[in-house]
Length: 392
Image (tube, rainbow, N blue to C red; front, top):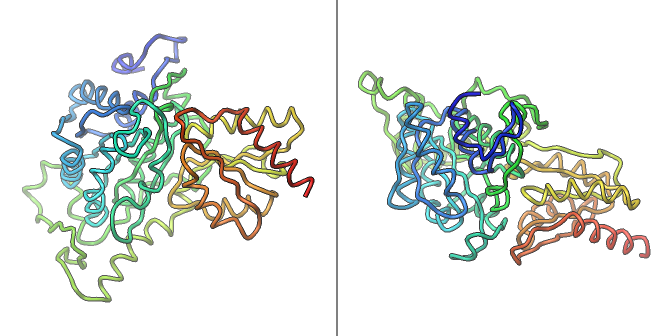
């Protein structure tokens, strides 16, 4: 284990494992993935990511910048990415709102960067130290216009490490910003962790072949080390719709072609981008679909439900967008109803219902009081639903 890992530990569990906070594991994953530029502004409950990057980036030849606000932070990351640096920022709800216009610019300019949003209760200042999953739809549709999105959701400390690495790889491969969502519980919890153990956690997806990059022709020259800038033709970068030259166009056909290509590079590789795990496949009469801290409760609820004679299948989603269409529809065909626990008023449940309602009933289980949805809460709701459908 490299020496700088020891800065992340609270205490040693054994020779190969540390007790690590989720936010710090996120920073560790970023460093291991090659992130060498971080710009940010401190905000609860994500600030520990920034603190670790401030300490560790200079030690590995990277650059850390504390900016005056979140707008400047995301813009600095976009600028760094256009020089060939792997960049990242981290924030929470209010800062994420400020970043939205620049996220749209990064999508249009095909500038790869990673944005970590450790969610807290809102709107506005809300309750800064309280968990929430209220930014799910903002992560998908926060910036204006029709645009693609890659959004991952972490449920534990190991996820914060490995999904940050996946986000860096996806950003570089598909030349676009990638968002990692966590909630305050995941960001601040501490668990036994080592990078080696995290690498063995199961993720189901297409293969992780990141050798091919999807990028528009005019952007190819942008992906080069900073020291080579003087030897190459400088490309034109714009937030306007542009053609293969990189310069703006008002041609209707070229405009539509450009926007469809932005969508298609994500949609056509959904099988690779959609990370998930299924427990008790085909054995459940009912199913729970969950993400983030609620997925932890759902996995624990599976054991309780089995003890109480309720056959349950659990679909744990690590990728929220692009939507795992085929995965959800296959599940919908197998079960009588789907329960979706989340720390909001049913934001993702609406998406699942739209995909699954032809085959099954989708029930939202939202909570917005600042408390965690417990395994017991999920099992009690499942028992209530099973009883209702049996008596119908």
